[in-house]
Length: 274
Image 1 (cartoon, rainbow, N blue to C red):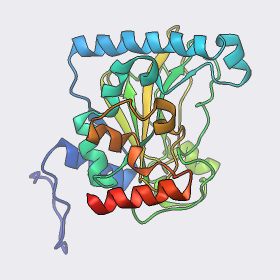
Image 2 (cartoon, rainbow, N blue to C red):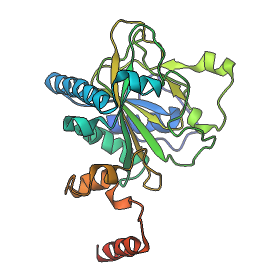
Image 3 (tube, rainbow, N blue to C red):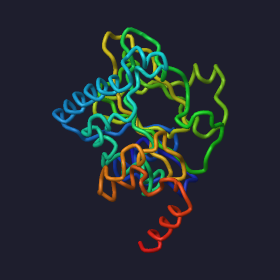
């Protein structure tokens, strides 16, 4: 305890043993935290190269930048690890998995992985508006159902459009007033290689990138298995994508919706045998 810290009438207190516990406490209380990914400079360079490769491949697959601009998808890379497998490591980061396991449960599913580009030159982009990562939901939960982990490929700064949050708004249903937004909005600056972790129900937005360089990140949303994935990963990747049981669970192979009564029965038999 700090020598300056004084209190009375308190018989219970949150125990914090390490950086993971600190992040969990911040997430529960404020709705956000910063977690160091633990990567070396060499590893960060690999992720940077992989991101750019995935971005180019996704643009080709989508018919080109102009075609994607028509549907406002030119600044997003859907499922970047599909285009460059090196980015799958970001979804499996041990520190993030520890935090998410404490907040949600050990059994959680990767709902989505998206590359996010905040474009240079103060251009508008689709993440530049206040939102929740479970959009259109004006509800609160006694325990979180989804956690967002935004990996910073580049440093997040005040000038390149670092994420803004409205602290503790995961605890209220309605979007707050303009007065509250103006007073309470907090910008999260974070070094490259870190994760900005949010309760998905906290209101947040990207801010304006006033530099001449795109700011890049990879967003991950982890959810309770009861929630539907953004993209049906088992169906998209195919049943033979991996035999790793831990990865199959993370990617949702164990909770794919049966397409027939026979498939449902087969799933019941597998559960009874395990």
